[in-house]
Length: 158
Length: 480
Image 1 (tube, chains in turn orange, brown):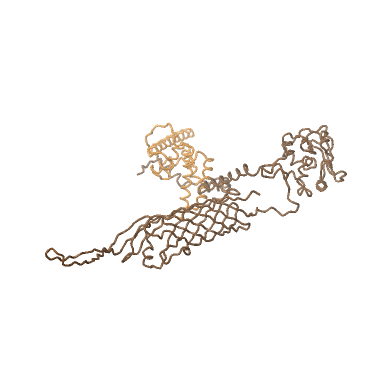
Image 2 (spheres, chains in turn yellow, purple):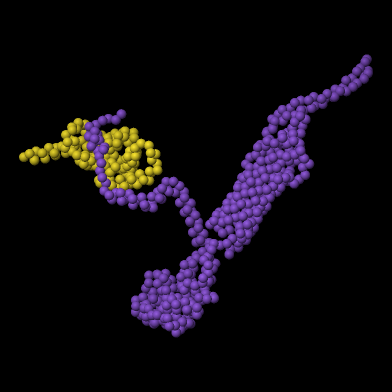
């Protein structure tokens, strides 16, 4: 669950706060768990909702990142080879709150745009555009990291 | 349909099942937060908390308001006020013998001996800054002084001597602080008049009567009268006992009445039974009663109500119409003879009748009751007898007719009024807004027993009423 919170938070301290708040919610609503399905999934949903509510309270969903639409390019398996979980998590945390929420919900949690729009209180088109911008921002950061690694590799070869 | 993107796949594979261990402080925080009271408030707020808190607040404000404006206030004796205002020696001539001693850095303050003359238990203390020695009595000497009538004269302090006492303003932060600090004869000497008046027959039970007075809530009417503490060793105070009292009340409430027909004419009674469907009726009345100390009481009153009934009946009877037919026999224009026949024409009548019957009822209950109290709530039972006089103001009733019963206007009959004796039982639940004003809700059941008017076997009704009565009662008891 802490990993879930880390994906939605900007930094570890915020993730800890979210985790604490989420577990308080879990204990508070434990009587509402109907013993159907996975307890882990139920707790995970509460965590996600806690994170989303936290983001909504901060009213950051309207935050705009000034990145233009970038063409989609394929990312080869080399990225996974060179980047670990921590690096990818750091990339996600670098995203603005609105992009990060939409990207997490869509790409990792598996929500569709209608559900995301309902969760975040925005329109589906907003969700789509923020997802596209999040993908573009991540792709650009991956390219930068790849270039940096390349140059670092060249330098080390010398 | 979800659009797939390599970026999504990359991050999903890496992060979906990722795990991270939170630091222990998170769990400590969860436990700490769970224990905090605001979670309870949060829980209450989500349920009925707001309503409960609103009621609680309203009740609290009401109680505080009534206490603040009506019956109690903090009492300050003149000596206390003077000292509170100046923090200095109160040497007012209005309070003879009053002597207050400054506890500040009294440069010229002499040592004051407080206690009975020649008391061997006197001990010496220094004033606040330790510059002026002030002797104070020990606890034992205070009590002894009280027993001996600790008067200013006995203390060696008189109003004439007061100017000799330093009037340097006290350096303590507040008069209350000063009072709390000076558990000495010095401070006690500030209120000799109060103590004298408050201990008519013996010593102060607490040793520090001013503290009792300062903290007591007293009726405003008694603000200028001395307090009389309970005797030493007296039993603890108990809740005020109920006093015998008259009360008057105005009441209103809905009830439903049903009527059972009785009489010797079983056919007509059977026809009348079930013809009327009652509406809910509102009764209003005035009541008075007397309640004894133990909660037993007796009450009476008069209620008026106007009842309405839907009248429905299918008339079935034979309508007989007699016709006279005269036969005349003539011959050459002369009447030979004549005879007359009477022809009766019987018609079977069936007609539905619908109407609204209206009754006026005067209800006089005489009831005994028993009540108990729980804080401001009261509950109990009541039972008694009742006279019920009802009059049919308008509507339709039935009379016998050949072959059945016929509907007639009630104005054509003489059986319009009835007086019956019945009984009533009920529960009482009351809430006292003030000492005198209370609202009662009394669900009750009553039924007639027999008619007090001679019926001669004619159809008459016995009524049954079920309803609730709300009474706003005012107790005439004078305030204790």
